[in-house]
Picture: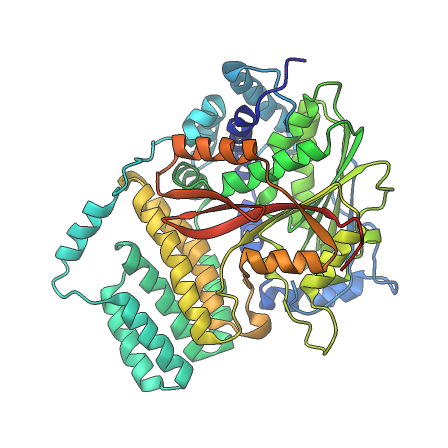
Length: 554
């Protein structure tokens, strides 16, 4: 084994492994079904549809045991009964060129014969090219770093419009009319917004186009909200478009890279010197994209690889295989671990209500034997933050209590930093306008012209869905319920967790990489033990690490 790599090199190598992993995902024939449930895992219509199957499959104890499915090495799936809408330092032994070649070999090993599919739409050719080129391809075309990138194009579009309107002011006025029940005024304002907005205009015009969708759905009621969310899934992009959009997104934006890298570095440090590691991941999102780089670094750890066990806690799908999406992620990760020579076991827990999943259901091993690490990337923010019963803990607090009971070596959390989870609609709309304005402006400034049609895919299939849910949904209909990182900090402490300070070398490594490869308006800061990232001074995401408080106070 070679000498340990510094954190900066470990961070830089993280996305070298991700793209071949995505390539295998997109070659699977039913990726579109997977993508739908990835985007809409806890939509009320889907949770309602799956509930009868959950009751059939569940035993009287509430746990069905292993769900029968296609064979998967070292995996088991549990279906948890419940209804409702709650929701390293050790371095690589390879240099840059050698690592790229190794990733190419690993991607071919991951392509097991039973998973091979014919390619009729050109995806395979593109994927093979990306596998060979690795990280170089994922970051092309290079994003300009100029401070005013994209502004000239926006000015030209605005000047060609003739009439100039303040779309943000129109949106706020329309929201006030909707809140006060003035349907006539709201309808007139909506028509004006629609005339001046477009999914292909500048950042403000695109934002207004999708926010108008949300306001219209709110006026029409809950049935319209479900229709709009599900209809957007019918329009979702093809596998090729998704892959190309991912390329553009990773080149333009550092948000997911920072989230995955911060979590993986914290997990690597918690696993140092441990022969067994148990990773518990809440959400099981992004098809497991976070994990290939971590598995590779654990496999190459000085002194030999540990035994790795992974448990994904996610939402069930309708039908007789509620854990199908989680199981498929497990198969991919098992193939990945096998390619790296890493001992690996996988288990899926599909639960409609995560607060019913106890530490005993998840951990299943003595924490003294394995280093238990718990991971949450933007998932706990979908849980209800109130119980509906006086003095009962909220689902959010209950899950945090279960995490505390696992006594993890580290609990790594990434949260959306925003107040657009507020219960009162006018406040929620205003905060959502601030938050999504930053995201649309970021994509406007960082996406090259040749990638603009793929930016539309991201905005239509991801940002639109989130915005419409925040604006039109109430109560259990709302999927996204963000809090500020300061409120999460207080909530975690009440649950009996103690925050671990962010190490200065981690902050500097992340900041240096973002400065070198992304737009200069991206913000990387540290505050009160949180690693913060945002755009033009607005903090959008926050990352932290926690352990159990020694005094057990909560």
